[in-house]
Length: 109
Length: 115
View 1 (cartoon, each protein chain N blue to C red):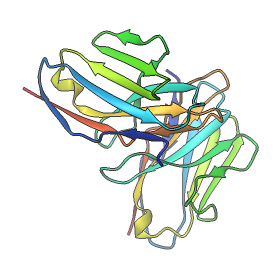
View 2 (cartoon, rainbow over the protein chains, first blue to last red):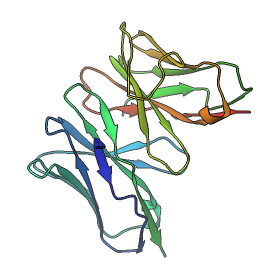
View 3 (cartoon, rainbow over the protein chains, first blue to last red):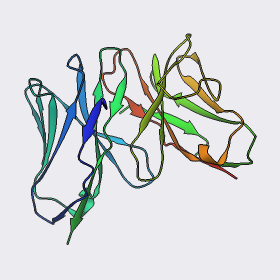
């Protein structure tokens, strides 16, 4: 079983749409959770950390559900520039970072 | 965020030769460094985790004698792909985390092509 699983997509949405991604993790002892954004042929960049209480950064909202072992990312008012692959990452209790396969988002005009 | 520099950005080498990739944390001490490999249209796959001054821990299925990792200082880790073959062609990315960091920061990645 993979440490972290994501729907690969692609999610094709029009500009202005709201889109949500989920990611499940297998290790209940995982400590920290993150969403990264990866553009084509580039390294991943940290988008936001995910806290137990949920957190919001502009159009982006991240939430953690420890009981069900999933994290989510909500993007409101999608922009063309949001088109990318979104990776969730989980830091286990041995400080290893595991990544999901990524969810590809295409925002269309 | 913290800066991690990876070098070279891309490299082409002949089959059978070895290639060394460097990963440096420029503004923090990286107690742990991670090496990933990403094939086209696939996810990042963790290859190994290295802690400064100790042997790397390899993920299942990764040959430690083929992918030599050295983490001799708190700011530098190297990955050497030995006797490279065309199937080793991939995007290799390092990331680094320090004691006070809860997140990992990525290098720019190295695109390796073995011909």
